[in-house]
Each structure stands twice: as structure tokens, then as C-alpha cells.
Length: 90
Image 1 (cartoon, one colour):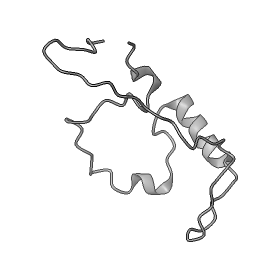
Image 2 (cartoon, helix red, strand yellow; image 1 turned 30 degrees about the vertical axis):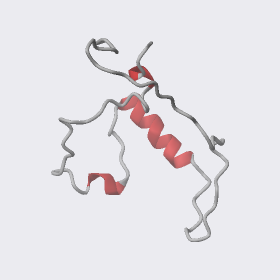
Image 3 (cartoon, rainbow, N blue to C red; image 1 turned 90 degrees about the vertical axis):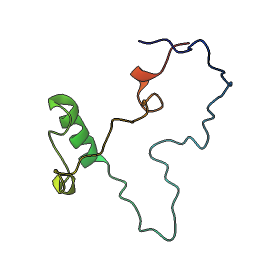
């Protein structure tokens, strides 16, 4: 893992505030949107299969519609806010 701080750069202190954290079963309804399904067994089964056999093994039917198109990722920022293994240790 590389160094978090580099000499010669000025840094500002920043923080992250987590708000409106709620349990998965609690959903804020929107009267303009149709009701969401509350049964998560199908998605749990898909997630379990993909964890067991590898990412992308089982897909929803619309996921394979545009396989030729790929997002350019050469300037992609690190995913340290979404991946616990990428969180820098200070």
C-alpha cells in the first residue's frame, strides 16, 4: 500500500458524516413511485450464487443487454468509501 500523505502537498482536514441510517427492512415510501417489493429472497439468492461462484455468474436479464459497451476506468477514483478493504489506515 502506498503512502497516504506525500511531502510537498498542503492538506485540509475532512470528515464523513453518516446520517439517516436505517435498517434494511425500513423503507421511506414516495407517493410518486410505485411500491417496491419487500421480499428480498430472490436477490439474496442471486447474491449468494455470485459470492459462491464468482462475480457475474448469475445476472438479471437486462444486465447482459449491452456487453460491447464498457465504462472507461483509466481515471477512476479509488473505491475507499464503498470497499472496506480499500479504506486507508491512518
